[in-house]
Image 1 (tube, rainbow, N blue to C red):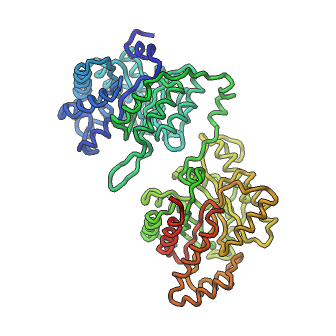
Image 2: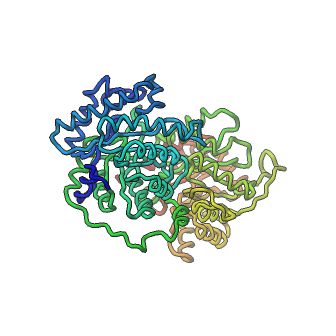
Length: 624
């Protein structure tokens, strides 16, 4: 190991070295537009960049990253600056050096190298040797200008980061930190697991490996622990985002505050991480809190040999913990409200998206998208889930019937749903085609609901398909099952439910109920045979719209019985029947609210305004 200042500082410190936070966040907060070239500010507005460096040093940072994240030939070409690579990188180093000298402190300067902004073969047309040469051009400029170490960060392609590391090693002997970014699924954008990443970065010759950007500190800590198992003697660096970004009032906001980062600074320290800092959304306040938290030396971290995985293959296929908002809310005991929406019959989605927006604004937690309800031809529910999540910004649950799908299609459809970032799936048998638009259509199936749940939870979520072949990376579906609380044969219904629970179901959605006794009687019946129900239960609520609507449900929809006293109330309400239906629903909810985990509301005739009234009333019932 060389006598480089970085290694000297690292070896004499009892706690992780503290790097700075986000440069881009700070620049944007001071009026720089996202479409401007941040790196060029080293020349046109050096005092602005220098002031941010100064604030991070004053906050306690020991390592400052140069403002050169995008200063490579490809990225600079987007602004017509491709011939100024050396000039912009040199300016970034020189202005940072001036700030460091003025601080009269021992601060190290890291030459910051980001992704090229182009795809490398085989996923793009840029050849590996071309990519390496572009990295060499930037890194050579940083080294010549006098950085103390090199950082390659926020890369999502292992092919690309290998070329960057090789370029760095060919240019100098400076320490190289290499960190990649991960999606919500704890894999890179191209599907590589933390275990694969750690192994590849270490073999590529990076001196320090780790994670930056991604989600918040909790995710990054989880990923580092997996990496540490593969490279137990390795050095690790982390710079997490301040949580997942959210758009609020046209602005990008990050939820994780400075105090939260301070807590995780201690956690990273206990995990044996060598360098910590912040990425997108972090500020000097975050770094100051982390600096304060690290004033007390961390206890020694001992990794028992028994804690290591039995094999790398087992680690690669380790099931992921579901990270959906629905899973988190149910896991924390929140009362969840889900609302069902039917896909449109034709091409137009405007009404659907407007309805979803209303539901989100009213306080609904998740939207359930039905799949061909009543066997009627409608738009694919995957497309609807994708549209709602992207354009409205609310999580969805995909209804996933087994009917009409053979084993081959089931698995392909699951992969497609996961690729569209759909993580909540509700497994049902599905309506028979005989009652729908195409009664002669195929109606067979290879799996019953409990079998499909087992395939998802014990197969796909473990990284293997039905035949035992790998699917590359595990999925992390959060899987629901159906329940009829008013089934005539409760013994049979409970038996089927238990099969779904044993297969790995995560939550339950029920058929609509209209009396609290239906819910309470089922819970008592189940408890008498299996003890308290362990899965979160979201009870179906179908607001009655009119006497005619109630009569239709009672007489023509199998499994639904409307009590006579409710029919009489609707009839007595006359023209105000829809308001009475809302009142009936709210009364029922108030009677069962403390016994269940949430609601599954099925609006009649797409009356999402009535659902909004119900949600508002329900939220008012909740304490706090």
